[in-house]
Length: 376
Image (cartoon, rainbow, N blue to C red):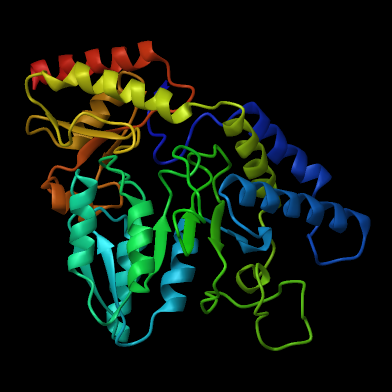
């Protein structure tokens, strides 16, 4: 099968990641930081080494600011549910995934308000639109780094500078960029960076990362292996947000995934070259609808959506599946982005390559799309 659903999760996982996760089930099958015996200590050391590796990769000053979560959605919920109070106002983008939109919308029942900022393919226009919607009650900007549907890359460094100028917090959903697009947590002036390692870092599913040096209220309370005599949750990082047993095999996989990505520099440029090639193959095809300009490095990530005539996107995906091509169709858990782009009724078919995608595979997929369009 030609797998092009890498914006959902990368597949296949590199051999080194599979081996690291499998080895952890034997070598690190102990609860880190909970016991004084050798196995627990060995496991805790591996977890800490992974924190250090993540901190170095994303330019984070302190490894203790790296928090492990079950997924990126949990990381976003920790922040969104723990920060805001009645009367607060925040801004989100028009391209948000439900991992941002739903918890933000839920806050309105607690007296928090929000506005949606329309995103432009012109980064400066996007920045000005954010600036125009800031008011005296605005506390934060919560936004995706890149759309999981249309691949549009937001100018996070400039948004970070705007937040510092206005005294706002910046919360970034980096599910589609971490491991693909360079992210400097410090230079971009991000306060909360939420990551899905199972995508661009090629780690196992069921893993997430929250990076922050701030301390909102925790989402969960429980055992942390520290300050166990207290009835209150520890107030120091990372323990404040790591109640319960960590996903140690997943963390070992994250470590191996970072090694894999660092051993293959130029992944972003390579995948963007493939997306440009694929876009060009579809651009003049009758009945094929493309929703963005030609992908451009520094303005896009390697994610492309299209439709064929009036066919529902899921029908197109089914036709491709019959040709052993795996794509994602529908609303991609991002109905807000589809409303903004006018594709809510039809959805879109999404293509997203990985390091394992070959040029000839994409050319074959484009040819299949041509044939489907011809008969539509």
